[in-house]
Amino acid sequence: MTQTATIQLIAPSGWPDAEAARRGIERLRRSGHQVLGEQCIKRRHLRFAGSDDERTAEINQLADPDRPLPDIVMAVRGGYGAHRLLDKLD
Image (cartoon, rainbow, N blue to C red; front, side, top):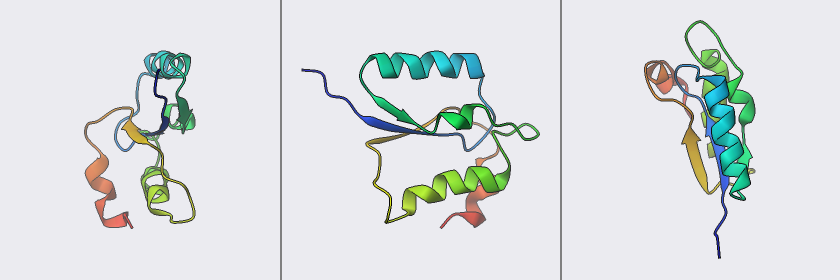
């Protein structure tokens, strides 16, 4: 029996290769997982995966007690940029 998970994507740093990210998302879905937050692979602001406010909101929503937590939170890309968000996190 295959166990499936709800996976929340976030992009706290640089923007990812959108085509590679789409292939990864499709592979996860073919394996039966529910993938949320796909819009983060399409965002770009300067060299980041969205504005500081967009990237911060994506992380802060995980602390919202009115929203169910996913089984897994997966950053689509690491790297430079996440430190800019630290003082804005709840």
